Length: 128
Image (cartoon, rainbow, N blue to C red):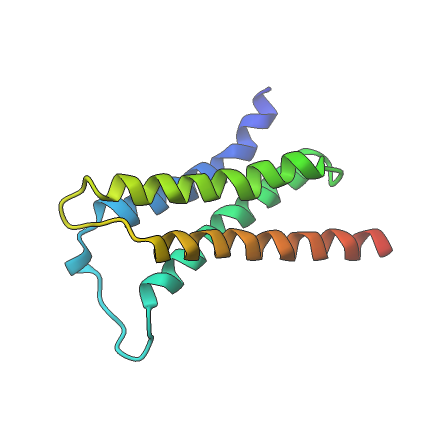
């Protein structure tokens, strides 16, 4: 059990950073890049890509590189997408924030992209 706890530290830290950035930080204090269209959607994509990648990395190594695919999908794709949806709902209750469907889509796409890359990686490792 103790060894399992160390595998949730990185994903938990990433999830806390995501919550802080998306719900606590004042939107007006974030510098806006002028040349990047929809930088906020890119930020959501990258945050949830990182969250799913951290979950996959830790889960993959916890199960000695032989993970259960269904559990892997549940923890690395379904849970982050639900978390992204909950954050968008919670943002409605913070003063300088509002929920946005497009942010949710960017969250889901980030997690989905990490999932596709993971399964490509697993398939390539099996061929070796």
